[in-house]
Amino acid sequence: MKYIEYIRAEPCVIPGCPEKSDAHHLLSRKSQGNTERNDYFAIPICRIHHTVLHQYGIAKFEEKHHGLVNVWKECAYLLREWILRGLK
Image (cartoon, rainbow, N blue to C red):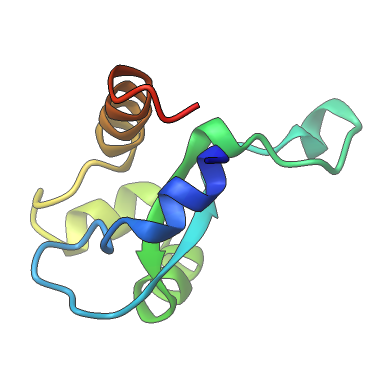
């Protein structure tokens, strides 16, 4: 299973959100002159919350959700779980 498929199969990072997830890339290689995205820095998030995340940015998005989500911790947790489950 590709990592990005694993991310898309996970629920939205917002607790209790029933919507289907997309992948949001926290980092891209664009800043390094390459437009390819680094899938290992992706989180699952529904389209509604994805739009809000882009509107607010990470810090304000996390603040808006009263600390219920930390996107970087969620990213690290998901990568760790994928490695431990041997899904590569």
